[in-house]
Length: 346
Image (tube, rainbow, N blue to C red; front, side):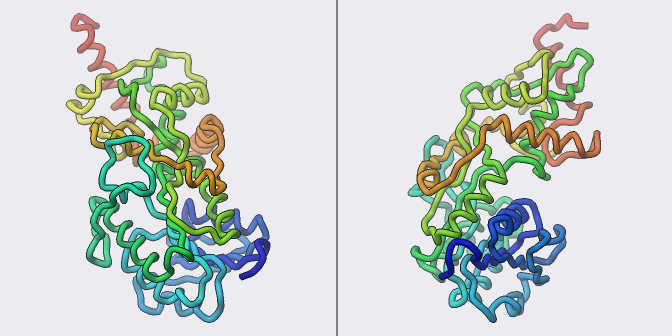
């Protein structure tokens, strides 16, 4: 194994959001970085070697099995891809890091779940056909890694909601942008009335830094890698401050929102971070103390949201979002809510 400086990182990915931050962080610290990917999400960071390969093909790893790697970092959700990678690299890598998800846990109703929580059954096939089996697919990926590398050479990072500038999934940028650009003339912003709902956001830059730091130390084990737990009203207060909002904040009853067809969490016509189902109340409240003892540090939420807002403001106004309400939907819902609360309104 090499010294902590100048280690050889192989990133299976490295051209999309988190993978790009991991690659850039490792390069900035003086490590040698190779990214293996199809390249459909973009280019590898300047300074990284790029190997174009399709991980669904049997020869995907032929170009990277001729030497030794100190750290492999895998971001896949497909069990077949992970199974092929660990088989090809088990004798070529010091440690294997797999970026998993808190979705692997079978029960999300109780806050404070640690790494010993019961898991979903593993997906039996090699291909995750839809996001409905995302958690099961990640469980299968974890099992492939552990079987090939063992507990002393593998790190499983069960991450929570990742946020920060570049969040193309539109979840962490929605609220600061909505508060900065209300849809109504009076500046009103509608929020879900969910005073006890936890939220957790880990800044993509902090997660990437920890993965690289852990790799340089050949850390191993299973870790919940999440942001600090903040109740939804507190998160929204931070987003409102960051957005410079001074208009009314209108709390909408959760059952009413569901009846209006507003989606939870993400997707078209949704309110990001909101989960009304009590069975998911603990989803954003997993215990990350083990990772923090192992060096994970996270920046203040206001810094993450401010930087995300700056990035959001640079993007096309009025674009279709993967999460959130359009201005038209926001106005229609606020009007419907006003009529519901005050039948004589207007």
